[in-house]
Amino acid sequence: MDLICFSHLRWNFVYQRPQHLLTRFSNDYRVFYIEEPEHAADSTSPTLHLKKIKRDLWVVTPMLPSEFPTNDITSTLQSLLVDLFEKHRIHPDIFWYYTPMALKFTKGFHPDLVVYDCMDELSNFKFAPPELKTLEAELFEKAEIVFTGGHHLYSAKKHQHKNIWPVPSSIEKEHFMKARKKVKTPADQASIGFPRIGFYGVIDERFDLELLRTSAEQRPDWNFVILGPVIKIDEADLPRLSNIHYLGSKKYEELPAYLAGWQMAMIPFLLNDATKYISPTKTPEYLVAGVPVVSTRIVDVVTPYGDKGLAHIVDTADELIACCEKEFSKTNKNWLKKADDFLKNNSWDNTFQFMKQKIDKTGRKQGKVISISQSKLNNPVKTAINV
Image (cartoon, rainbow, N blue to C red; front, side):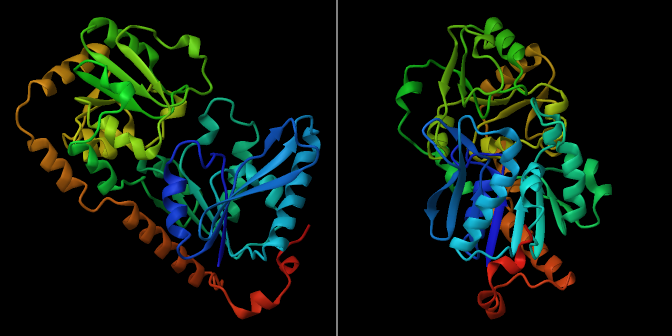
């Protein structure tokens, strides 16, 4: 079976939901992860760059010349995709979308099943294309099944589709529980004093820079460790104080070592359009690492984590500081057992199994064959493509 995924996220950018899920799906499918095109100065003609991540998992990056005409991009991507399908004998068993924008160059294909994993409200993000909402409405029409990245987003979208399921992002317990053990302190964090309040993730229009600035100003004896890339905002706008430490992007494998040295983990997000429907994966990851969490009033953090006393919910720097002081003075770890009990069934393996069962059931209900068959192997790929 072939699963072709179309994503707005680079595979090597931040290891998150698409990587967790599609790595698992590649045990049952041949997965081709199609990224958005890159423009390369040394490229003289459109081509595809394929990188094998593991057996049956390929990342495909369209490479276009730097001065390539905008009006030709859609037809060029479609042609490149046809070539890819023919060369690798790909049949469109499942088309999996993370971005509705990919519909522009995939409308001529006829997949057996269309999955839309709506992990965010992309139209609310900075620099979102104006046609995104229209294309998403079209994708809702085409998709046989839709998943959402959180419960709040599900509440906003559930009226748009009859087969839609809330699927918050999950955790790899074994990975993040390494932070509870004695681990080697990363060199760039070793010289930073205690206490440390940390954050990892993308630093963009969602990040509350003023909350960070004010908290650091009020407690100059505390150290704030910030991990992650800065995108869509000007780095010159980042607060620069001696107790704020920007350590840059880190690999997924490195995160537990940093978490092990934090006394508090924070989710300092603004309450704006871009954060209205987010469901931060870092919330359960922080908890599994054994680090107390303080967050602004993000709906999918408030419920369930704030409601169950597993995360502190704050609106101001004063409240953030008060919650940190409260945690620093604690001597018992009863909250950690409570968090472990709550998260005992939370895993990417379970999430993958749930989604796969729903996809299989949807395929059977639709009367569509989404398992490989000899008839498909014998038929030319072009029978599934109309371009």
